[in-house]
Amino acid sequence: MEKFYITTPLYYVNSKLHIGHTYTTVFSDVLNRFHKMRGVDTFFLTGSDEHGQKIFEAATAAGKSPQALADENVQYFKELWKLLNVDYDKFIRTTDAEHENRVGMILQKLYDKGYIYSGKYEAYQCVPCESFWNEKQLEEGKCPSCGGEVNWVDEENYFFSMSKFLPVLQKKLAEDPGLIKPRLRHKEIMGKIKDSMEDKSVSRAHFDWGIKLPFDPEQVCYVWFDAILNYITAIGYPENMEEFNRFWPSDLHVIGKDILWFHTLFWYSILEALDLPLPTVYAHGFWLMKGGKMSKRSGMVIDPFELADKYGIDSLRYFLVSGLPEGLDTEFSEERLVEKFNNELVNIVSNTLHRTLTMLEKYLDGKLLDEIEYGEMEEALKAKFTQYHEEYESAFKQMRLPKAIGAVIDYLREVNAYINDAAPFRTGKNDLKRTSAILYTVLESLRLTAIMLYPVIPDTADKILNKLKYKWDFTSDGHLEWGQLKTDELLEKGEPIFMRLKEE
Ligand code: ME8
Image (cartoon, rainbow, N blue to C red; front, side, top):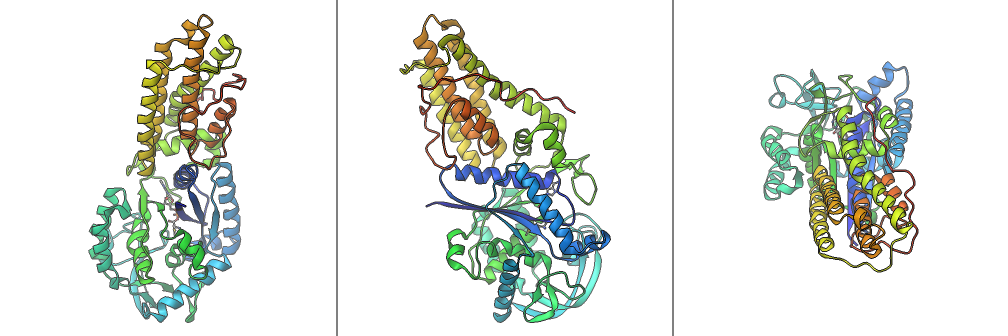
């Protein structure tokens, strides 16, 4: 059976989440649902990053223990994902005993292989990014990831011999550019390899909020080394290799472009050291606010709870995944959210459904005739469906979600043009056979579009399919074949599925 293993970053528990984090998780959920509804054996992992100096400092400032702060925010993360219909299979916390034990085993394994050794550490540290850099990596003396201030640290600790693996990686990445997506991110990383050719410290001696090194309990594991291993510990490595082999290599690590270096050169070197195959990484751009990156640090953030409350869950999911074009940064705007919702989900999806069910009630008392006779116009529309469906599938497989959604909406535009041309409002009661064939063609198109939109707006898809009295279990393939809508049910128009939104 085909499998699909997808992950989000583990979000830091130092504070609440904003629309940027929400985007990554919803985007991953949409991709996961797309594969799941094709009958694939999917596994969707998300979680929380809880160790390290940054969390320790945030907890101290709030007068709490790091564990208490983490517990509180994990609860909040889970509430947010539940509200937004994020259907993950596992939520991993880096303080889970299972994860901590497995990280300990991996550290010991690498130490025994001679890939971890002790030495003197000197680097520039960026506390908010939990990152360490050499002189060459800094950009104008600032952290290359967030552009913030860095400070100098030196201490005795342990190093991972990353430089040993980078030449192999360089070759592998040149041979297989598809590992890092989109293409511009692959290019970015290829350009960074030569400045990364040095070993990386993987322990800290000056504080203790972390996983103790099994071979030196005076030191704790560097938070990025601990957290990045979650993608393999969550599925059993190194204890349960049967479960692990079912899903590894993962199919997609979805991240923002800020943590690309860690998820490629750093992560891939660890995997090389463990003799594990490399997975694909997809890095998206940023949601901006007033031209800058929306971030906890800048304080310029948009609260997802507030937005979901104002505009609804599916409108938020829809806007997020259709609103950020591949690889690019985009300004977040409520005005655009409302406009997109009204233009696409209300004017096109909801109105087409309501208008058609209204005609069905009016001319055929809510029941389609059993026999459907297709004419030329119907055959032409079916051919268009095949074409848009292919475009949708191909865009989805390339993670081009705005394009995939665009294909569905464009198809519905064609359906509306077909309604105008076929004119069931003219044939009406005079030619019931013809009217029924036209309305069937439109309702079947709506059934197909509801299924295509299901990964993005699952509740709405469910509502549409309920109105059409179409039953499916959301996880088996074959529902996107033309002609599966039954004609033996009484369909009622009821209330429209969406009303126009106003910006608040
Ligand atoms: O980096 N636009 O966690 P984090 C789009 N714990 N996405 C954004 C964004 C924005 N303005 N701001 C944040 C960490 N993100 C580490 C990860 S993984 C082993 C450890 C999203 O809480 C984006 O996915 O800082 C980014 O990569 C992630 O949040 C960073 O979350």
